Length: 325
Image (cartoon, rainbow, N blue to C red):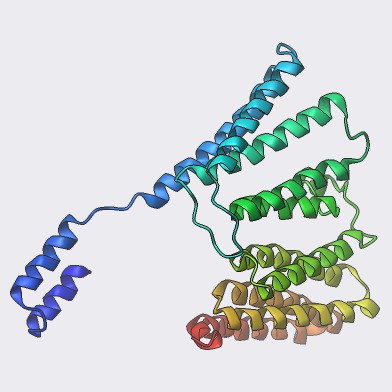
């Protein structure tokens, strides 16, 4: 690409020969950045190490004393936390640069080791009894503190996930496949709506107070999916009387996130608001067509997909205009 541009500039006599040679030499010998490759390797290393610790515990739980396992995990976790607090920069409401290349990864490893330590302690000694919510809430509170103290979005994600689990939004794939999770009472739906609204309000309030404004995206990312998933679940499961309420929720959330997307010039939030809105609208139209019955419903569906395909093309072609760019 650079060669094509250089050749055009030469033909139009816009770039003198000496500068042209210098530019060509620079592009031919410029350094290749390994920044993201190194970060990816470090993240994979942290995940593999934490996974390895879990496998070692699982495979040697009968041959290694429980005290030795807990001591090893506890010492490693304490060493990581000591390194982080020793090298951390002072807290600021604004963005704080990482003090070193491996700092963020050591902090992430410390948090994962803490989860392993607490989980194994609960499994072996049942220190929390049947209060499983407390076992989830404690690391969530700790991770919120660490995320703000160390300015780490990854730890903030762990904290928000822990908060969601404490509120009852933890569902395993096995439970979904086996049907062990009961959605018929709408408990998960209302919890998801409450979680999404609470996290969204917290994010917007912190942004207004100018406290770690760069965390707003992480908060709203979790909140948006929780809100839309819960809204679509209620829309799919409820009868006609309450279905209108969730149609109102869907329209309101889509509108709110589109406004936020335009304000922040964020294609991501514009995309998810449009995507979830399209899913809800498609469901409603298909339900109306199914109730109408007859051959007209088939023609209606065909026309709908043709129209929406054209709409998708227009959306991607004009998304910059929609965002006000």
